[in-house]
Length: 191
Image (cartoon, rainbow, N blue to C red):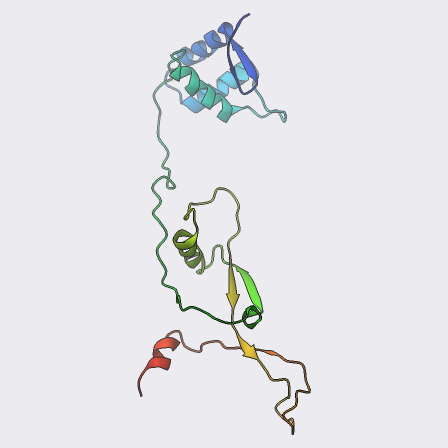
């Protein structure tokens, strides 16, 4: 038999198209999914693990319909696609004060995973605002990290009980954590 169309490495003949038309005519009230599964069973269109190539078949049926070779029944439903109407991430205000220092002054730098945490909104906002491609919702499993630095300096290395000003101990990093969420306004408040 002559080949009419090839799709995803498989050739289809006029007899295959007639079989597909017969399946559609036999089940006019069934869903497109049901029809694609029946086509896969009838034409023995399976993956290497034996599972029906249902999704590939649905794409193929749409191609046949676009080429006026078959007429599919109307869609039963159109599932919602929340990604199609996704809004841009909410802009999160961040302190943009220019930091001028040696790189070593910012160490240690911590990379923290922020996916599915309250910090994920900050990540999305920063990528949307500053990444050259902007923010788009990734597909599949993915990671989101933010680099943090809370190092404000190092000790002199002389120890708190040292009688001299000479460094005797190894230098240690100093970190400062705010004790209040509104620490900026409290520090800048006129007394």
